[in-house]
Amino acid sequence: MNSRTTLRIAAAFAVVGLACATHTGAVGTASMKAIEQPADLILKMKNGTCGFVVRPPTIYANRLRRDKVRWQVTNLCNEDVTAKIDFPKDPFERCTREKMIAKGRTENMRCVVRSNSDNGSHPYDIYINGKKAGDPDVEIWDN
Image 1 (cartoon, rainbow, N blue to C red):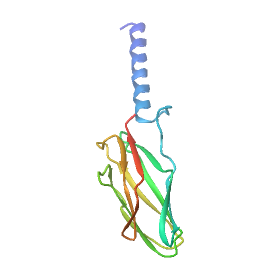
Image 2: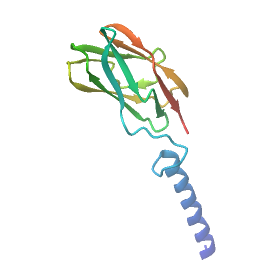
Image 3: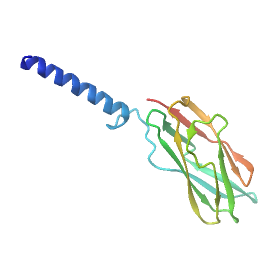
Image 4: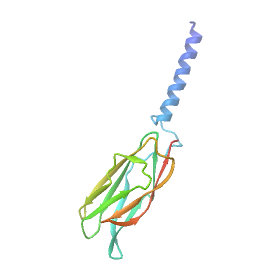
């Protein structure tokens, strides 16, 4: 094999390696919306009952990278509460689905995106002390 052929083979391996690194997220790309900060789920009093606010309102996760989604739940209500996250069409595995959160405390609830979950919007329900409090979204993609 001459040096020109060796150089071409090395260049081909470099291109394939860069493509693989970009696809798996090892090298950042502009089209990936990485989730690095937790979503804040703040429980607070609304009209005499415990309600919630989610920031950001939509969470983005990549199914090919099997992103981990974390809700940081802060209880600002006047009582200890049980917070539950329920997915009608479940895109997650290894989830913390329900947690008792003491008044004034912050707890984490985590999930891992299934690699075979469907792309698109996945609405989920938030229950506080067994009552449905709302239904924000998780957006899943494989870009």
